[in-house]
Image (cartoon, rainbow, N blue to C red; front, top):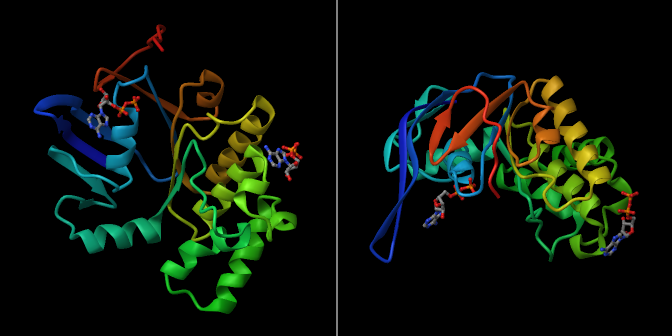
Length: 227
Ligand code: ADP
Ligand code: ADP
């Protein structure tokens, strides 16, 4: 992943907000990167750009050496399905689908044959220790289990990069620690992990910390957070 002079400006009610200003960064395959900084500094915006969910106002985001703004919408969606997994703070599971069906969904979108889907879903449910919950619906699970299901869904298609936006934000410390250990294991097995977090404890799992402040990357140590 590479960004070159990336700017993101949101315009609402004729007011411009510069969310990112000339951001340059590179993330190599296999890294575990944590993006930190105070509320409103542009962390989620940056994550959305490098996970191909949104496009910059100016500058370029490269994913696997391809400029995302030059890709067609279709190509970008295909890249997301094939190469990217995403874990959210609020889990974002589909309430009408069972645990099994939630995890299977990305494979349905990839048009994988049913027998291969079943194999993959079973393997990933075992790995995340949620197989015993497969017939449950998200509302019937604790937050810790919901996030494990969400991680299972994010990795079932074997993405190259796993993005996580405050993955432990709605979890108690025990379940938060569990999720961080899972992300760490996935990284050790070769998946690139890019995580946004407020938590210095979480950031310690990363190999590298990118500090954002007012839409800029700041180098060196920042020891002051404002929430
Ligand atoms: P963080 O994730 O670090 O809290 P965000 O990326 O969410 O920061 O936001 C960066 C800035 O952009 C903030 O000033 C925020 O209010 C603004 N912003 C984010 N999303 C939008 C949007 N959709 N419309 C207008 N302003 C936005
Ligand atoms: P563990 O500590 O083993 O991860 P929890 O103590 O979080 O498990 O939860 C055990 C089980 O209790 C959950 O899998 C779920 O079935 C049920 N449970 C916990 N919290 C809730 C909740 N808020 N709503 C519904 N069910 C819950």
